[in-house]
Image (spheres, rainbow, N blue to C red):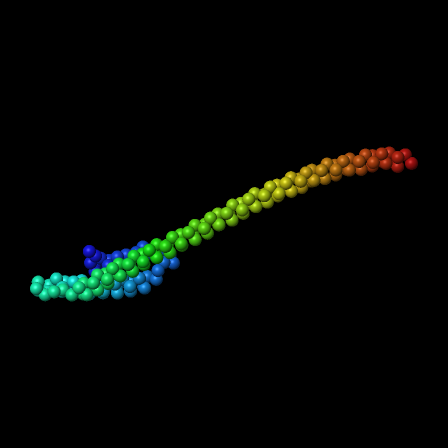
Length: 155
């Protein structure tokens, strides 16, 4: 059988966005008070003289109160577990979405890098062609000047 001390020492693991800790603590204190009262009544009933009859209403009321307190405690724990699972599910979903976004960004980055390499290669090729064309034009100008120079010195 649970003792009031057992109820007093019960601890729940903290959970993000869990139940309001103050409300849970207040409920447990109230539960302990009612449970202590039931234990006192029970002990008084046990101490009554053997010839004295115990009221079945007292026993039933005590049993009902204990059962109700147990059910409420189970509901609180079940609710906290459910809420914790919902929070974990939401966090897992968010992590999954962020991972998908990161993968998409990586793919975009790879595509951008490829396009930049292609542009740089094309630009480098154009520079090489420009240098070759400049050299060819300089050579043609030089040849034209050489041909023009002897003609002007003959005159």
